[in-house]
Image 1: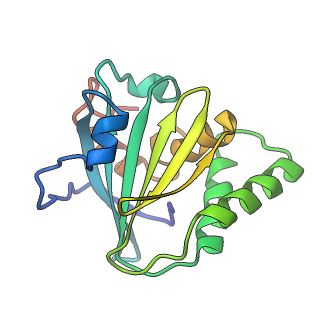
Image 2 (image 1 turned 60 degrees about the horizontal axis):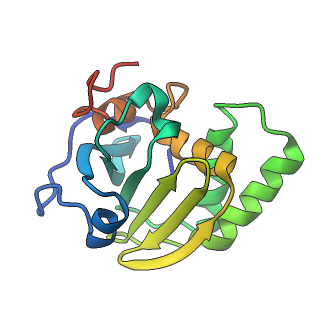
Length: 179
């Protein structure tokens, strides 16, 4: 997921930032908050887009439903994405090693291997958990509120390892993605 250096350069989607139909159905009034690119050593890893509902407050991202879409430009195994995700989640909070291992196993079980051009989208529901899609196909629901909050914090927490990407994702929200 978040692999190293982010580019704050916004991406421009061909669809003008329109959310997928299932996002519009799940998040009434959702608007594109921002978009950016994840780069590592100059290589484009993925493009990211964030949709939020009216009243979204970046400083309290965990209190708001949202959807985050990643369109990959490199191939990765689901296990590698899960491992890196848990490492990034541990930057935000102290997670006991047993819990981190359970989360990594759970994520590895639902995150598929990805190839260039594939799109994964996560829907965050505060206090409930998250749902994951590949393209327009729902893959899984994870009913673990803390795992879900920390997972989306990979991109949205002030403790993210990629503050430039965070700022780009939050660019159209009040505060403009400022820490």
